[in-house]
Image 1 (spheres, rainbow, N blue to C red):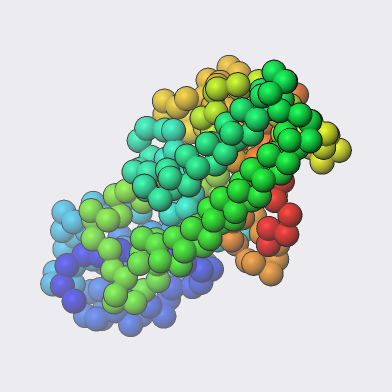
Image 2: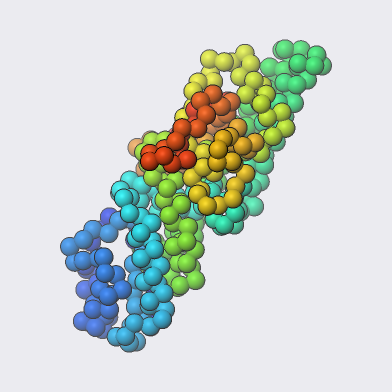
Length: 324
């Protein structure tokens, strides 16, 4: 096949067999080594790494060869210090993570209409819970009426959160990244496709690394109406269920990208977040929605090296049960 292409490695593997079976023999192998200088016959390539195969019509490196090789270098730099666990999370959840990071941000990618719709529904339900709480406080609902209304809305919220989980699974199984993985002839990438991956992989890998370490991530929700009372609305009468939640707000991880979340503190959208975590061992590297957290009590704690990216301590306002 003529023309340069690339693919994203999808598992820990040695690529010497692939290299040795390239058409055009020694010329192709020499060119492969030149375009992928960090891959030796004895090295193990991590998931997520970009592999370049040059134009097989010439032994010289073409402009497209060099462009793809530059993207591969960028990706390698982005994956420095990445271990197998976080690399696997990255490759298996790339499209879901990209959608998560897109919400309320600029420059990471386009937010799918399905994702925006799901989050808008969750935000609307939380606002309805707060509205019922305000009506109880104003005396237009009895306590029993408020509790019944809230329980009904919690059931709605449960279905919406599980729906997001099913949407994420569907996106994972029918994703753009799935077409970019492996070395099948059906999965070859051209430079236009790989540019977006090279541009976004560093930030998305930061989120994957956080998830693989066992920490949840939170997506800030736009529930500014009645903002400070949503925690009370969700916890009144069920305080024992609103245990402490520890998570990293995604907006805090997106250094250099304007977001609705302020760097110095908790902005309006950060007070209530939908949280994701890794599923248990039986589910591999899948993500699951674990609930809604908010009601900041501990603030933001700086990460290693004085980073502004730290863990947030709040309360579970609604935690999904049996989410695996």
